[in-house]
Image (cartoon, rainbow, N blue to C red; front, top):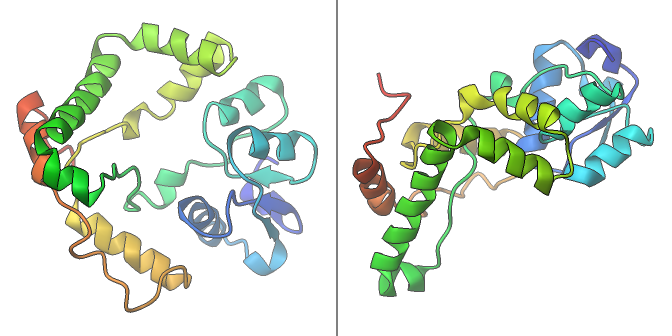
Length: 212
């Protein structure tokens, strides 16, 4: 597969039956003029499961997390057609969830955790990048060359700014409603707080990379 047009009449893995990864596939097809009527969409799982479905021929193409996309190219078993965030950059993912009881009863612990979490991210990117590549390659049984390529291919979207953006939440819910994955009457309002995230950002001197 060298182009999206090559997907006509093929089996395409969407990870799940709904959600961000399937949405990515739908938007990629739509923006490249490929009708979903002309492809067979298959919920084929993620990570190793999705990669195995590709290499075994269960699917002809798939949405997949790195380093498996980079690994497919390195092994000659696949070719990267596009990146999800280039098609739906305003879809919001990656939220950290805490229970109501923990928020109410252990706010100081929660704040320390959240601040430390983002501090580690910042230090890995800026101070320990090579060590992180080596560690990740070992953990995922992948060569450092492939792992470095996988990570660097995503570094431009590795923002990790903790404060949840209201506009992207609104857009994300519109996407979910568009495909019937969430009821029209469901609202995200009141389901999140930026109280702790803002303190973490201020403590670490982080600024919103999307601020105008």
